[in-house]
Length: 102
Image (cartoon, rainbow, N blue to C red; front, side, top):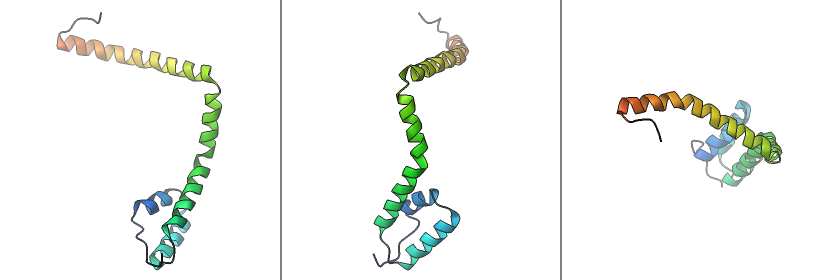
């Protein structure tokens, strides 16, 4: 724990995605000085990630309760994707000399 920590490690890089510039500077200075453990950074990273994604998790729960809505959105996406892809597939079949699908 007393040894300085390498802030180029993935743990510190992930943590820095959720931190402000002053927070990064402070933690990286502490890490370079030694006296802190990786567990402290891991716990703080977990707390920050949970807080950051909290609203998205809540929205996912709401969507999961509306199965009909989700199925409708997916079906609409399928229709739009097929409409966009149809001319491309037709051109590819023509270029390959293959007839229309059966």
